[in-house]
Amino acid sequence: MTLVVGVDIGGTKTSAGLVDSSGALLAVRTLPTPATRGRDAVLGTAAGLVRELAGDSGKVTAVGVGSAGVVDPRSGVIVSATGALAGWAGTDLRGELCRRVGLPVAVDNDVHAHARGERWRGAAAGHADVLLVVVGTGIGASLVLDGRLRHGAHSTAGHVGHVPGGDGRLCPCGARGHVEAVASGPALLAEYRRRTGAEVTHLAEVARLAADGDLLALSVLVEGATVLGSAIGGLLNVVDPEIVVVGGGVTGCGEAWWRALRDAVRAEVLPTLRGLPVVPSALGGDAALLGAARLALEATW
Image (cartoon, rainbow, N blue to C red):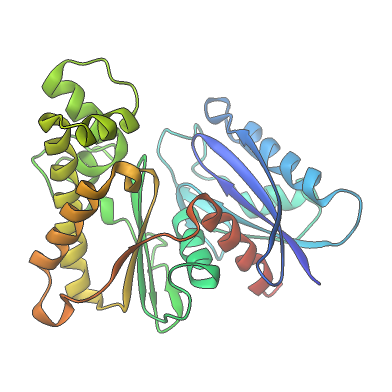
């Protein structure tokens, strides 16, 4: 049976998984991403994890990578990236990692990898037309139409966090009035702290307060989910998928968040789409690893 390694490079952590051709995740290794130390440190961390999982068996045939940033899957280069990964823009991810591990490497954006994983073994399995949205530190999406993942002409397709929404707050991309500035994890946490002055350090605490009856915490979560749901609903009117899969850490904020999200989607879509399922990711943190592995298995070298 063919073995590959899937790698998920994010601003906080880098994970690698040993995966067989059936989609079984056999082993996982994770390390903090040395995000402030530059591209060589990030590449070295990823390569070390791959070597650890591959060992000396010679059975691993390829590596697939899902990375933060705008990734050109054809050239394997990081087209652009935020400051979350210092010096990451311009990195020849495929070439540099291939040189370090001595194996063929295929690369894509991490949200696209997440979508591949969900279509292979998760909530979107069996669907040819899928919108996947990941809500965490940022907000990204991946669109699959007729069974093909769409990257767009400039490898930028899927940045649903950077469509208009909210109240003009500054977005991490430098623009104002984007959905990500209101609905991402850091945005929700910052807004609760702004309204209350409380020294809350984790979004999970805001979610707990909302569940315990804190009306300010609840209003912050509902506002963010509503803005995001409206943006998703508008997008659904354009692309008309079979299913919407939503993943990422913010989805753990509780039933009130999910209810507000789904209500906003339904309020925005055309009548023919009001029954379209909006479901949670089935694979959680493993989705991007499995999707990166799938990328390696499907690549033509």
